[in-house]
Length: 270
Length: 350
Image (tube, rainbow over all chains, first blue to last red; front, side, top):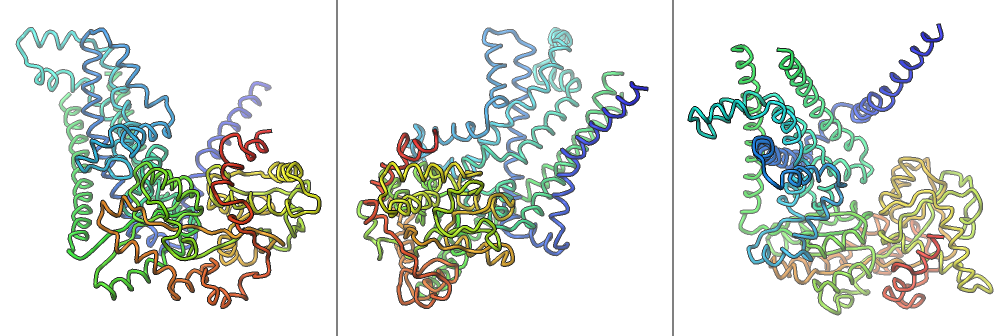
């Protein structure tokens, strides 16, 4: 009897936690977004600045995704299929963006590429703007989403070992052919999973991007920054409308993520 | 296995389609932007400003665009950036290429001068020490003034919760601090020790110390924190305008004449070739039309005739101390109160 009561209490606490921490805030965002009707909602998300912010966010996300996918595969391949001295150092380096605060990530780029940074005279001579412009935003986003793909791949590739690749190499297969025919089929679902995590983080990144953006409206404002601007302008409904756009994208990504997770589990059981 | 392979290919295909669609979206946007810029006669300037000027410059940019179109037959696009004044100055120093800055403090603009981006003598480049509009610090309280706050000495009572931003990062907050300092300095038999004590009491009543003026306003107005917000007069009026039933403004007996400063960032306009339009942009702030617009946005116009047109809006009887006369200018005030280890740190850290 007491055990049953304990069970109920624990379930209740768990459920209450989920409702208060996750479901309620999400519903509040949607409710706030729609509290002045659909028209206000559509006006907010079709505002030229909101659309520019959305485009910048998508642009940044795609570049980060491509760069980090390519890099992540290379890094995981190098770390798991070869033995070299600085391996442990490389693994630690890859993890750095996970462990340092985004504001530091942003400041790193300011200190390097900003007007007071050491790389500035060079950039100035080449007439390239990095911080307070789109390249800075892309760099900061790549930095914070750096480890996602490789971190997904390394454990899997470690456990599958390099026997099959070695066998293929002995039979005379070339590097890329081995990768395409043997490695890739093994890692495909983990790879997709890592890419989706990377996309989710890139879409929502606020801290690092806020530092390097300069908040130039219509030029260097990403969607999360645009939400903050609208909020600061007492434009709560519009802020939450744009925020709900991010929520919808996030939910789509989560559904994709779950599909892939399901595939991953099935793969293990095969 | 075949089935699995098929599904995996489908997933890749879906991803590819997603990427292509979003890629072309982005491509489109870039084309649009480049089209907008390729109009031979269009020119773009960036105005890096502080928090509470958002509404004013949004309107001012419209009248200036019309004016410039009429005057020079040239399309000018103005890009706005807003944030805490000190933070914004920092970003310009670090390479945010503003053509003009319109900040809360002379000191912030002067930091940009020290970094070598603005020429010496900028204060005298435009009328009235380059302050086209002024403001002052008032109290915003909840309707009915439940804590009965009338003047600065009511703020140090027990149980009064004050919202003010951090003087380390916010221009507005420095004005708040100095206004309070001046008030306690004007009391009978006041000594510096007494002023420090009273200000310390005041800051021990601060319940939220935001990093910028707008953040503090949002904390007070939207999130319902605190009993009194120390605010720019214009910011206080704006809150009343949006929520007339909820707040009222209390003007203390003594406050400070806040002179936000405007300046051309000389190095950047040279680089962009925007000297002429940037100068005109700031000069036009002194036109009757712009001065009235400032008044309508609850800034006190620096043109005294137009200020008098707004005598029913502003309390013109409040005694306003001037930073130059009372504190010996921003440099001296910053040195004395706000640099690391100065009076604010001494008061706040203990």
